[in-house]
Amino acid sequence: MAKIKAKWIKSAIGFSARQKRTIEALGFKKLQSVVEHEDTPQIRGMIEKVRHLVEWTIVN
Image 1 (tube, helix red, strand yellow):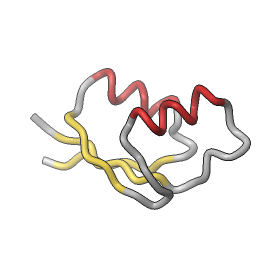
Image 2 (cartoon, rainbow, N blue to C red):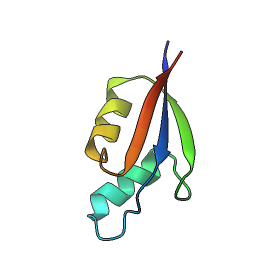
Image 3 (cartoon, rainbow, N blue to C red):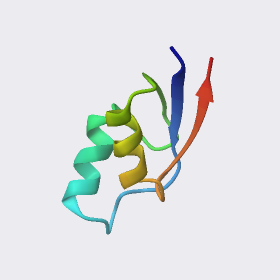
């Protein structure tokens, strides 16, 4: 199964607490950090909610 590599590129300061929790739930610790997850509908939905804060690519 494919994997998604996501990079946190913009600070969550000034955004809702729900979006901050989503960033935490994706596993980001610090700005500019990169996480890798399985490509599932749940992960895609989380990334879609914070698409303005992260960049992502699909890795095989």
